[in-house]
Length: 306
Image 1 (cartoon, rainbow, N blue to C red):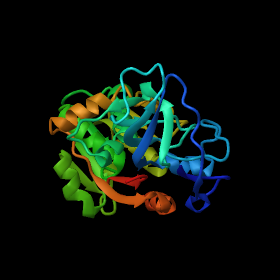
Image 2: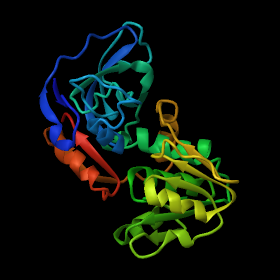
Image 3: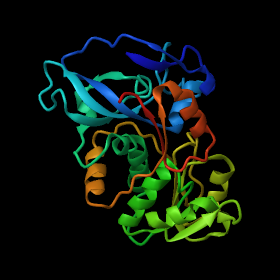
Image 4: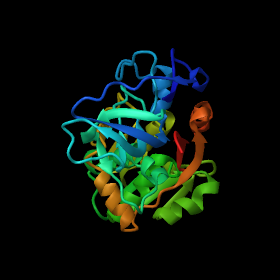
């Protein structure tokens, strides 16, 4: 099988394309012929070696966690899936493996996708939807009528978070660049701030901030919170609470339990899926470089097989 892999840490330029032999199929596993893989900021961090203390890898390592595809074979203990089934899933970051033509994974990490959903649409979901949901409702305890500020509203997580918060009855404020204001409004944002022109730190009375940026953006976000407000950060491992404000790091680990909800919302017309660019597996470096610019509008995807 063809795979994109790294033999050492670095930028997108360290990614190589080569062949590999798929591991033997265990009783509880399924082999998936991958059609599409979603590219996430975590993939850049894994490739750079920034996550080695949290998610250690051994070389050669194939990046990628989010994928959709078709079941190629199932282990002897797998009864809920069969060859030919269309599925979506997420691998553990230390295992990786999604930027390849074939992936062997526990069948319990796979969720069937309906005919109404394309492989492209499915591959955008696992990390972006799961992380947004966890940040808003598990860490953020968002309630109807509350005010939520979502940074990077046109990014993969931001797009999902705006729609989930809107659907939950929250007042949604999002930051984005001017070119994406109409998109973000169409997703359900009640108020949009062009971060290149306006200062979001002038806001007050925000119950929850979803932080996807860290650094100065995170530090400025504390000032906008209402008494008892919260910040749920996807990037700041060391975030700490301040006075009566709560700070939580969102550690998203498992997607299979939330993917059925994402699919249900999609089928009901409550979840738009926005894609930026689809690259071929041969162009994995270019896909990672595109994401590294920080200006992707929706999800960047890799087409692994036709």
